[in-house]
Amino acid sequence: MNNTLQNLINPDYLNRETIKQASKAFDSNIQLQSFLKENIFKSLQKEMKLLSYSHNYQPDIYSYFSADVPELFLSLLESEEFKQLIQEITKTKLFNLTAEACYFKHKNYTILNDKETIKNGISFFFDLDSWNNEFGGCTVFTKDNIIQQPIKNSLTLALQSKNQRNFIKYVNHQAKDNKRFIIKGYFTQKLNK
Amino acid sequence: MLKDWINQKHLKNISKLNKQFNTNKPFPHLELDLFKDSKIKQLLKEIKKLEFKEKDSDLFYLLQTVDFKSIKNKLINEFHSIISSKEFYNLLENITNIKGLGATDAASLIFPNTGYLLPHDDRLATRKIAYILNLSDFKDKDGGQLEFFETDSNNNPIKVAKSITPKFNNFIIFKVSEKSFHQVSEVLSDKKRITIGGWFNEQYTPKSY
Image (cartoon, rainbow over all chains, first blue to last red; front, side, top):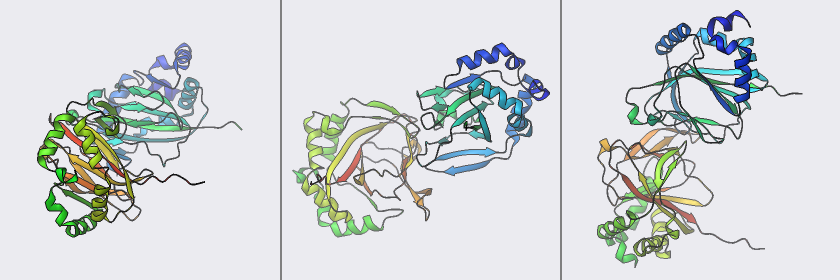
């Protein structure tokens, strides 16, 4: 494995045995906890709160705030080694990357959009803070209606297809001033020719 | 029977209501105290006896009964037959200019604390007019407003243009169209937002072969 991964992620996830186990456990989704090295995570967590966010608002589809992915995390996402790791765990050949840094606060949500063509691939959610699901704002995977508990420094990977979509529940007023910071996106699947 | 339920003053005022319905913004709608308070108070007592099931999706969090046609309750059945009657459809057609009504969907909904319904346009097959009969009294700070969106030239919702705070016995109808984006804002207190709602559908005509 190359330096980038070694410098950034928890060494457990570079261990062949761990990767093998994660791959075995991956059915349609998996949450890799304590994913980044602690010092890397803390600096990313700080940086996420300082980004310049803009409100994405299309009332019938989404309302949340987004910004460009911080350089350090983007370099990880774009690295061939990271892609290989995700491919091994999810047993899926991956191609293009789409990603954004974002936060969800009271009144924010995403709605499943029937008009959208879903690209097959692997969606990912990297959580910067732990979160109370009573606030809403959790990620829901539609296939088995799985509600994912956001845990800080965890990377959630999930199949993305017509039958396995995801949305982020409306954040209710119990969240008060709390914000759920996430780096989210997806890799499209490379089709075998 | 219609006379037992409807406030007669409105029957003398149809042309005024028609004008209001068709000129109200951001899309044709009307709110009025169509039904007699005393009847709706009795109806609410019966509604409170019903079983409500929790519904949770990307679009909403609320509790709902089954459709009234599957409920055995004298007063609820009477109300349902009133709002499914030819006379009532005639009244609605005269108010809205929307013709060919022939079937009414009706259920009761409760939005509890943190309950909401996100923006959507209600369009589905046969729906012509959507309606909501409010059975709760809310203050602005309680949330639970029915909100209508202004749309752009491509019929995408842009921003809330009208907000209606629940008031007991307020009956709201609006035309279902590509512009009829609306939502129910989150309930922010422990008050329950209770409504009867549904759609007046176009008359079902079996295919001839």
